[in-house]
Length: 180
Image (cartoon, rainbow, N blue to C red):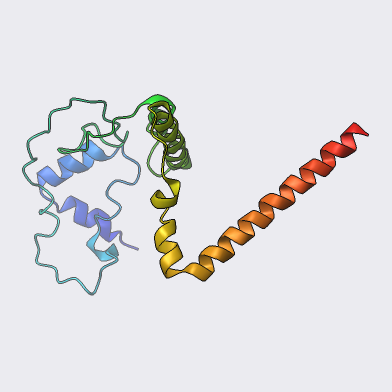
C-alpha cells in the first residue's frame, strides 16, 4: 500500500521541508499535516493555500517585567501575557514545578489545580493579616442563592449540617471510648 503522506511531504515546497526537519524533535508535530486525514473533511472547502496561512508576522513582544511561566513546548513566551498576578508564595512554587512538565501530562495540570486552591487559602490569610475579614456570604453568592433557589440552598445547608454533626458525634464518642 502506498503511503500518500510521504508523497505529499516530498512534493512540498523546500521551506515546508525545512520546517518539518526543524520541528521533527517535537513529539506529535505534523500529525495534522496530511490533508487526507483532516477531521473537518468533507465540511471544509479547500482553497489550496490552507497550510500557508499559519506563516504570519509575529507581533511586537510585550516587555517582561515580572516572572512569566511558560510551557516547555515553546522556546519563546507568547507576544502578550498577563502580569497582574505573578507567581508568589507556596502557590507560585507549585506552579513553577508544574511548568517543568508537558501540557499533556497530569504532572502539569494537577499541580496547577492544587496551586489555585493553595492560592485561595494564601489570599484569605493575607486578607486576615491585613485586617480585612472576607464576607463569605456575599462572595459565595449566598444572597442570590437565597433569593432564586431558596429550597435548594436550605437543603444543601441541612445536608452539610447533618454530615458535620454526624462527624462531631462520631469523634466525640470515640474520644470518650478512649478515656475509659
